[in-house]
Amino acid sequence: MEHLELSKATYILEEEQAPACLVGLDGCIVYCNPAWDLFARENGGDPAALGQAVSGASFGSFIRGERVADAVMSYLESALRGDPASFLSECNSAEVGRVILNRFEPVHSSRSHRTVGAAAVYSLVRSCPIAELHATHPVRGDLYRGGDGLIRMCAFCRRVQRRGEDGRWDFVPGYIKNHDETIVQASCGTCLAQLVGEPVSGTPYRLRNKVAH
Image (cartoon, rainbow, N blue to C red; front, side, top):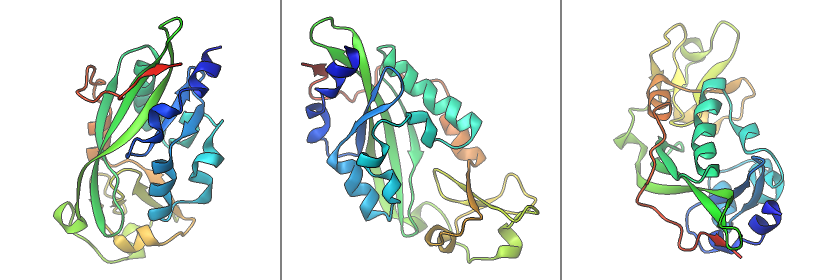
């Protein structure tokens, strides 16, 4: 019943300008709004990341790294319990630096007033030339490719780890444009520290209408 009521609530996010999705109590994605697909296409996203492809899949299945997954899911779980939560992160392209507010809002049933799911909304806080956030570096396989042959790129800021230097991450635009299968998702210390803090409850953002009819 909760899933049915949530599926009727897609109108909540249809006009939301930020990329957003609805997630059921079972942790599966029910709906992605038009802005979700628009952002994916504008940033060269894989077709597998479009709303039609991810609907029905587990929200957590798209998160790489155990610590990152645990932290992100704690924010979602907070909203599924009825408490809004949010955290800031970067979401950069090769040319554009972005600071994103990741917001998780509970969605309530108009009948029982119980929480039937959550809305995950990714609101742009800042957009600027990437040089305003990070110095750029050229592609150098000998500097960034680890002993296992892999290049580790932060899933948030998109910087890559220097070989043998856990705390040194550089922004290398050439690797972002490169779809080499040896580039794997990781998380730099800066982004991880931002993420693993306690969820922030009672954020100023509110959905225009959070009630599922």
